[in-house]
Length: 107
Image (cartoon, rainbow, N blue to C red; front, side, top):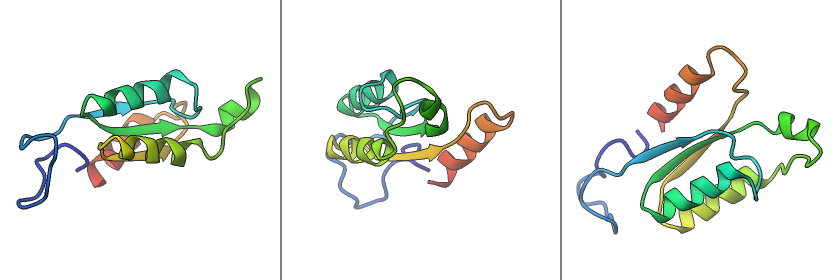
């Protein structure tokens, strides 16, 4: 599981020998959006990140979609020393929360 268990024995962990915390951040699809800012701030604080994004929503908005932003944000978070995964998901579907938790558990 991403960030929910201690690192494997012998694996280097520069931040501590204790299990890392994990934050699930929804709506991190734009470079200058709140979700991306939260992801970066948490990563700087030593928290691993799992974020969601849904660019079809952004495409309908005046600001438009930044299709490459999820991969860019993932690289930024990893450069800060945090583990990071993301999932493209429509939070408007009924089982979105369950899908997110399953995705986190399989990372």
